[in-house]
Length: 100
Image (tube, rainbow, N blue to C red; front, top):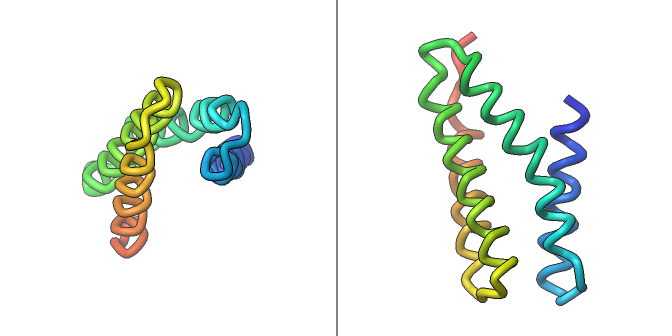
């Protein structure tokens, strides 16, 4: 859906802004995370039983990104670990095949 892709663009912009210490990068990340997490939860709930595991991994990935946003809010430097775990899990799922 369009909201999912807009959320992903906002997340990317928020990460880039946070890396460059731009104020209010947290806001972009938080706003982008809402449709991102919502679509992933929706896909997990409505998935076929054979795809539940992959969609579950995607939900866990979104939760790690949520943890990264919380770490940014509390001004912790380890927020990037959550982003890296999210990227790794998404990369893993992208090479798995969904059953139609």
